[in-house]
Amino acid sequence: MPIRRTALMAATAAMITFGVKAAPAPHPEADAQALDLAKQAIALRSVAGPGNQTPQVAALFREALVAGGFAPGDITVTPVDDTAYLIARWHGRDPSLKPLVISGHMDVVEARRADWQRDPFTPVVENGYLFGRGATDMKLDDAIAIASLLELRREGYTPRRDIIIEFSGDEETTMKTGAIIADKLSNAELVLNVDGANGVIDEKSGKPAYFTWAGAEKSYADFQMVVTNPGGHSSEPRAVNAIDEMAAALLRIQQHRFTPEINPLTRSYFVNAAKWEQPATAAAMRAFAANPADPHAIATLSADPAMIGKIGTTCVVTMISGGHALNALPQRAEANINCRIFPGHPRDQIMAELKKAAADPAITFTDTTAGSVSTDASPMRPDVVAAIDKAMAAAFPGVPVFAAQDSGASDSMWSRAHHVPSYGISPLFIKSSDSFMHGLNERTPVAAISPAISVMLSVVTDLSR
Image (tube, rainbow, N blue to C red; front, side, top):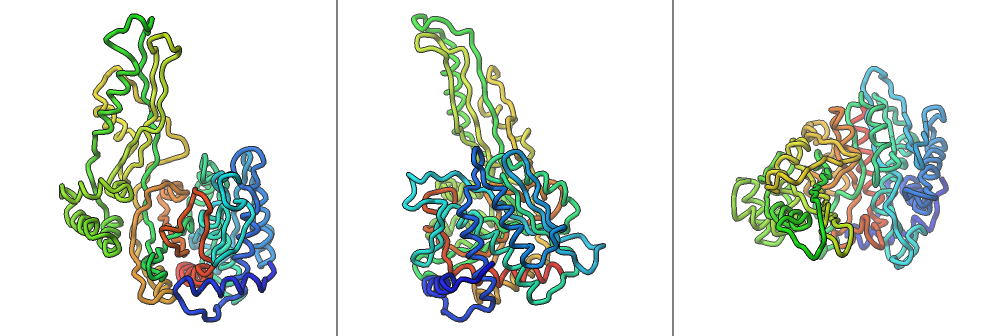
């Protein structure tokens, strides 16, 4: 991939807004390659459905890996439906060791040109930011991971264990390819998932505030509720009405609260991240970390949409339908309850609790979840923690680093389902106010690229020795 002077100039200029000195980058070729590769990937509309260009992204990444020294026979691109996935292996010195896996995805969420200020699939570097769908989630991360491995090869590094880099092709939709990849790599030592942006930039100072790595995520679930009724003529209302029954049950579910809970990862987050929150929220976070049954802390955190999902399982109605004619009593009403389940709970347990909360035996519940599995948290492995701490201390001296738990779903769940420890570690830093993953005008600071590559070089080296 060519080094573009304009890319380097943009990266250097953006460092000023990132709150660090504009010193020469220690790996300019990798920095430029990451930005250039990300821009090429963003230009490909890898959205599920007609015209899906995820296979072209896979071809682009394959070309970059081959140009960087990977043997063509060690890279496979496999078509699946309208998408594809990629697996590439860098052979280590000791084939008896389990491989280190670096994980990402190539597909993105739909983005309509009419809604954006710029064409979402025309990458633009402007005012120190890379704009475009995938700038944060997660084509830039993909490019950084590739550029980091190729930098290690240029430096002459040879890993002791195999390093596998893999990209799924439908993480934003069915997650089918992520499951396939996890099946194929079920013998891995561990997985580093570089999805997203785990570093937080302080809104006022513009400097890195803290970095979190994720060792767990909540499980995704959908439950269908259905109630039926003989119906009748609307001029003859009856005491039992399917829509009325469903509405009453949904209100009872709305009032239901799952028992708040905590694990070592979320406790770490509450204790460490509290200092960047408003005083009332910070106090509640510390109190909850000390006692997850503290009623005042629970009330405070539950009232904050950004916090309620961190203290336990949440369920909310997302779709409802009912009736068949304007002048007839409804014969059927149904609703979808979407849940994000705290690690350690199987879906049938949560469905049973919802059924009890609905308190109506006439309503049937069915688990309609697709593309999701329930998994426990990965262990806080000392070698992983040490590698992350070391890398961050070198790239961001003095910036706090601590564990956390993701509220959303990622391909890591498939690895954890095979009991392969999996960790979310995207070394990109971004302001919360600049985070537009899945939203409009997605962007990431260009200056975040160089330190992110430094972190990747260090972590991958330490965990593949």
